[in-house]
Length: 144
Image: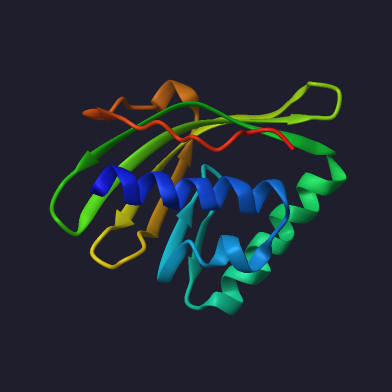
């Protein structure tokens, strides 16, 4: 049951990123939530904050001609009936097949509701990635 919710969440997430669907990406998050990267920590108090943050990310993707989003590996661990952690190795490529970003992200997911929602994301270098207890297969095709 949890695996199916996680698959649905990340299929929506990938599709939204591939098609620059702001509302759909924002719909994957619960609020408030945090995004942590090596450079900064962002507190998203509302969907409006998330729209601003993801508009900036989409602008960068468009400027860099990002046209492929790859999930190189994904795994998860169910901590309780309401909490799961997912680790994904992402790769963003441009229209020439050049890597724009290659990183891992650790997601804390609220799985208690009908639809799973992201509560916190920690993006980090691949060298700090972890393999969690269960493999997660995300069936969404990952190129535009």
